[in-house]
Length: 376
Image 1 (spheres, rainbow, N blue to C red):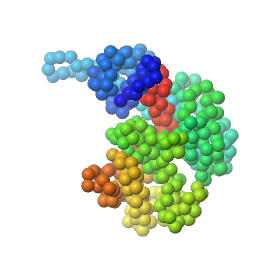
Image 2: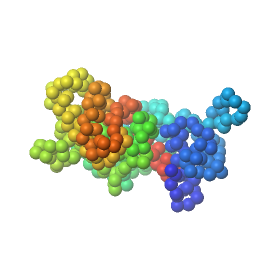
Image 3: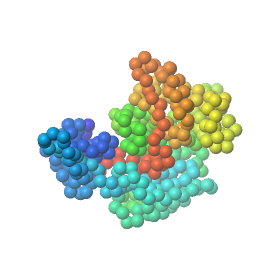
């Protein structure tokens, strides 16, 4: 549902964003259907679509032939590669810049490995060089940044990280905005991944879901009513730093028995004496895997009880778990949730695989377009 703006220009931008999001997640549709779904008048939908058609962001698909006399209205669709964003992803292992269009197509990527200690100024320089390499003179809507750590969405600052070379108080949003004179949005990596899942992955089927990423750490993000739940300053979703075992060891965050200490990939591999994640997942009956699934089931049960999602999506390395693990997790969760008598919550693997890294930053930027914060 499009939101009310402060004035007519804001309202048009909001309705425009809602239309673009609907075509992205719902596919091509005729103007009459779009007007009905978005609660817009025929005049409003005609004005918005005519403007977007003229600017080349939309196209009309040929009307399908009807078996009976009559005329079928042409459907409107997004035009690939016409609306672009730069997507920057900063992980503990690499910095990746990609050129991504609104439909999620990754057109160009530059990846720089982070395999030695790095400083914030060095990361900034790497980001700038990488962005310049993928831009190549193309016109883009802006830059979306996905980064590990606590991210202050108000200022676009990475305020702290754990186990990432002491990076803190890194104003990457401000620095990139000054250098490129473009809009820049910075969000924590799991939130960005959830937005990408919402627009391009299995999340398109659910307006309410929780994304849980299992990687070097553990993180979560909530999509509620089709929108990202950010919290006051964007610090929500730190699932890895909630307590799983109260008598457990002290975490780098200062808490005790954190989920991250038991379910993060490095910890799991060490306890399982496995060299790689593939080695660990190869034996679903091993004691290490069964303990992992038991602990993860406990965590996911709490997530479902807290947010009442329509689905839980496991991403990053979590998406690579065998199907038998998903069956076991789903059974465990739905046997214990308080809503078990009324609903079954599916536990699903992310469908985006490696693409999610390139798409996530772009999804962050496009989410602001969908909310009417950019005027095309």
